[in-house]
Image (cartoon, rainbow, N blue to C red; front, side, top):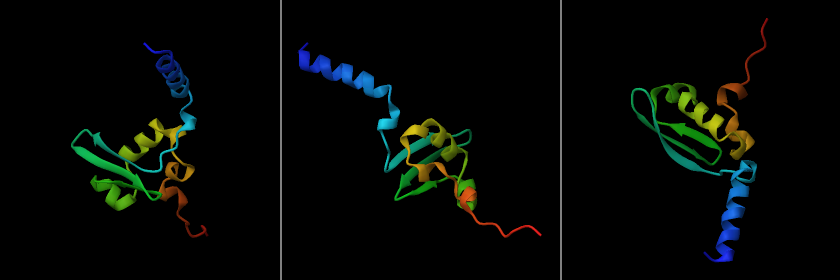
Length: 92
């Protein structure tokens, strides 16, 4: 094996130990849920999932799981749920 390729393999191993070097700006995935497969996407600062819950809440367990898995590789705004950013009227 060429020494330059060996060097790249070693560098890749080092990079793999530092996931904070990677920031996703967009992604698509298929999540195999308990009842069905769901298409997930993150683009232009917004999440989307094809599950029914997402259509009502703009977040779901599929997105939350992916946020946990990719935690260090997602931009900060991709880790916050729309529910967490809503402004509620002050309690009386």
